[in-house]
Image (cartoon, rainbow, N blue to C red; front, top):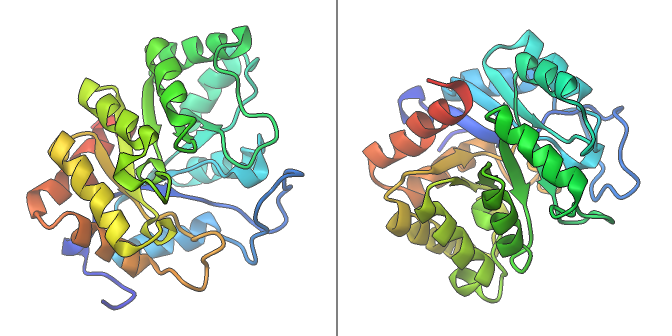
Length: 273
């Protein structure tokens, strides 16, 4: 497949990519230093060349609570929505303004950070209630062993949950990973969505296919979405956007199910369509 995909073959919505510039502040624990800009204008051009209509920016852990560039990008481009990192004590007025600018959820990150969120604390229980009141979702990536507790806490708060990258199962256990099993059960309960994304981060192409098959068996395609993970942090010279689109076709051979995953579901969740 060439780097530009035919629009008729492309998903309508890319639900996971990052925007940043190399001069943005990094957290002290940033696991990657981007070698070049990944600007909103670059990504809009990629969307247009690949027939992608809408996009959902994933807050990048590299920049912590610096959501400024994402918010300014959404103001310039109404085709975009995004998630944000926020402090648990962030007040409702600030969150409401972020919603008006296009933020649709908060990102909670439990990997590669020195002090992962304690969802049982008063501060985070309060934040989760505000997320619920805003009709936002929690967007997360947690290691396999940590994921069941995250699911339990978010579900217990009555908040919608979106999990990245197939839930990133333990590479040795694969579909038998307790976290992946908890993810499947949560999808069945109906308040959790899973992104079929970042196949290049999985241990093998066959492993990604196996995760996709398990999710399709449980969901029939409901509550699944697709994301490219552009600009492929730490894999910038190994992954391409065209391959990310091709991966969706590999994982989901049925065209009607792909339309559900790549269009109908994310449009309802993120754009209210």
